[in-house]
Each structure stands twice: as structure tokens, then as C-alpha cells.
Image (cartoon, rainbow, N blue to C red; front, side, top):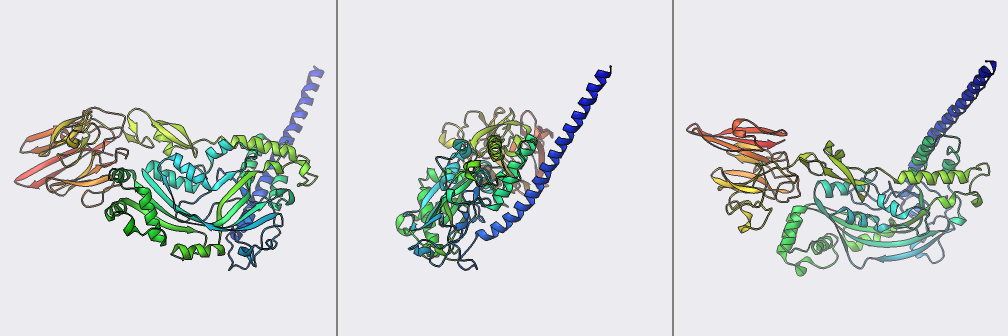
Length: 592
């Protein structure tokens, strides 16, 4: 009995001592996490304020040359600009320190200015693109190619390059990616990005001859290691190293400027332009030339009618310059101003792991665990790159999120009965109205004199008498969006049902929809022009009209609006229209 008690007592003492050690390690790791975070936040503010250097500044450093040797995290940083206010690719804190020196003899483009460090080579690289470049960005694949055009990863980098590229500028972290993905997937917009670049200078560094920055050494020295929990170590690495520095650094860059115009065209208008044989890329080049006064004169290069069609199809467009003097309007004047304020237009990176070893003598001898820390950071990177992908609104609880392979963006595979980019829209119900007479096509099947209801309906729809007219009525529920021609909203003699929040005739129809009248203006509708557009709130399903006890009706998924009955997620909308002597009562089931 005494032996058992003694064993239990010794075990309890060991447990308490071990537990005390674990608590102490956890407290030390937490203290280091907070202390390093406060320090790096201050340093990042200083660094950001020094990045946008110009010749007019007090400093005589080459503008933006301090980005050589900066950290770069391909997952969260932006290698390209798309939004109006973005001015340059984003970078992390410096991983190498600089002692600015005069450029090499003969570097006339940097006369009177300083370059970062004697181990950084600098050479003038004056020049510009021979022609304007047009990117048609309509899918995630084309967006990925355009995004990575200015970023290179060194062939010898000790990181999984294909995996890094697949998650580069991830949707969750990159404002530029979010902006473009939302336009492509949710707004059904094609972005035509037209650019022309000017180069100013090229910088390359030899890391073997350079010292690490105090900020990077501080972050590595204070990293919890080996005695701390895996969870705390991973959190420190992600939040204090990957977030503030990255897992690569810039070893080569080109400074210059970029002039660009971004044009946004709804997919339905792209289809129409293609049918009209309008060359979108050519029109974008001409538009760029007109804005910057460069290139072929529009009047001699194409039909005026094509330009008119193109301009009418544009939903939004904006001109921007990155680098140089934004106040200069012409290409010639702006390109000459780039050497006064060049920005990074292309760069290459390599991994940080080659810097983390005892042989390099870059860290204090007191940090004997630098090799172990390198292994922990590499292990953390493997986990970090397996980022969960994002689906719009998590598919609304009505579908499964499937990875697309781009930007960690997922595609919703909707459950039966639901559709849309986020599975928030109910699928088309039987009774949905599509097309009117020979005025609005219900364009979803083989051509029957243009697919106008007056002549017949596409498979899945049947001809239906409607309001002195004829429409196509959907026969059965389907798991797909409505055809082009699906009716949404109505305005008739003061009775109004909104389409996507817009009143037909009184307001412009939503994107992907167009206004049409019926019977010379007795009624107005918005109708879909693009079958890939969402069936918006206001989509009409079923119909009832009463006049002098005469009733016309057809159902919406078995529910008759004429009997004040509509299916779930639809509501009844009705009104009395006309004079006391002749009053019509209209009833519709309207999508919520």
C-alpha cells in the first residue's frame, strides 16, 4: 500500500511540474507573439510611408528601389492592379537591409540618385511596348494568366511552385482578385484590360553579400520553437512571418510605368457584339488610343457604326496610369514622366528557406535552433497552402462547394430545386413566362421563325394565350435558369411589378435584362437577354385576369394566382386596372 501511494505521489509531482512547464512555455510564446506583432506593425507603417518615393521627396533614393529584397507572400499580396485606386503591386517588410550608394558609372537614368546597397546591380532599361496589349478576361483561367504575368518564381525556389501559383492572390486575401471574380462570376461581366508599359530600370541583388534586415532577424529570433505547442508555433509563423514578410523575397525587379484602360461589358452584350461581328479587342485598342492619343486614328481604322455599337455596350470603363505623373493626359507626355516616379512593373522571387541555416552565419550564435525553425516554417507552409476554398455565401445552404482550381474560389453545385452562383435562386418553375408575340423571343431551342411565341415555342415550353397576346409557358420545373426572353416585372396602366428592384419603363432594367413594350405601349416588361443571368426577383410565373366575370388563368407550379395562391418563395401581386366601366384584375405569382 505504501509503495502504491509513493508511486502516485511521484506521478502527481511530475504531472504538476510538467504542467507548469507547459503553461510557462505557452505564456512565453503568447508574450513573444504579442511583442513581435506590435513591433512589426510599427515597422510596416514606416516602410509603407517610404515606398512611394519620388525625386521631389527629401530622399535622393531611386523611387521604389527599396522593394528589392522585400518580402513577398504570393497568397495574400497583389502582383497586379485592377481597381481604380490600386497603384502598385503589394509587398511585405524588407528581408534584407540596405546601405544606399551611388549607382554604377554610366547609369545616366539615375543621375544624382542613390541605389539600395553595393550588392544590388542597377542598369538603365529605357523602352516601351511596341503595341498595346489587350486581355479579354471572361473566365477564372484568363484572370489567373493575366494576374501572374508580372510575377516570376525562381526555378531554384525551394517551394511547391505549381501549388503556390494555384493559390496566388487568393480570393479571401486579395482585394484585386475579389473585385475581378465578383465581376466575372456574380455580375456576369467580361473585363477587357488594355495596357501599355514603359520600362525605366532593372535591379538585381546578390543575397550572399547582403545582411538580413533587423525586422526579419527579430521575427525569427523570437519565434517559439521546439518546446511550444504546434498550434502556437503555426499561429506565430502565419501571423508574424507569412503575414508581415511572406515566404519569398524579391530578388529581381523592373521599374517603369503602366498605362491602362479597363472596360466592363455584360456577357449578354458580348454575345450581341460577337453576333454583329464587332471585334472587341480591336475596339479596345482604338479606345485606348483615343484616350492616350496614341496609335491609329479611329476614323480611318473601322466603321463608325461598330464603334457606336461597342460604346453602347460598355457598362463601365476607366483610364488609369501606374507610375509617372497621373496628370499627364497624352502617352508621350506621361511616358516621359515615368523616370521621375517609376513603380514595380515586373519582379521575380525566391524562397526564404535558403537564408535560415547555421552555416550562413546570418543569425546570432545564441539562436542554435535556426535549422529546427526552418523545418517548422517549411512544415507550416505545407499546411498554409492547403487553404480552404471559398464559395459565394457558402452556397446558401442549398448546394455543395467544389474547388475550381483558381484563387481558392469554389463553384456551387446546387441541390435540386436551386440554382444561381450561390444557389440562392429557386430553379425555374412550370408556368414561368417567356417571350411575347413576335416582340420578345423565348430563345432556348431550335429556331422556329426566330423562336417568337407567335410562331411556336422551344422544347420545354408551350404556347399560351395571354393578355390579348401569346407567350411561352414553361411546362415543367427544371434545374436550370430561364431562357433568354424570360419576363421579369411589368408596368401596365399604373400597375407596376419591379424586376430586380427596377420598375419597367420608369427605370432602366437590371444588367442582363432589356425593356420591351407590348401592343404599342399598353404594357412594358423587362426580359432576359442572357440565359446565364440570374432569374431575378420579379420573374413572372402564372397569370390570372378577370373581366366581367370572365377569367383567364394558368398556374405556377400548380398554384393559381387567380385563386390567390402562389408557391413558396413567390408572392401574389395584383391590381385593378382601367375605368369603372371596364376594370381588369391582374394577378401574378412573383419571385421573391
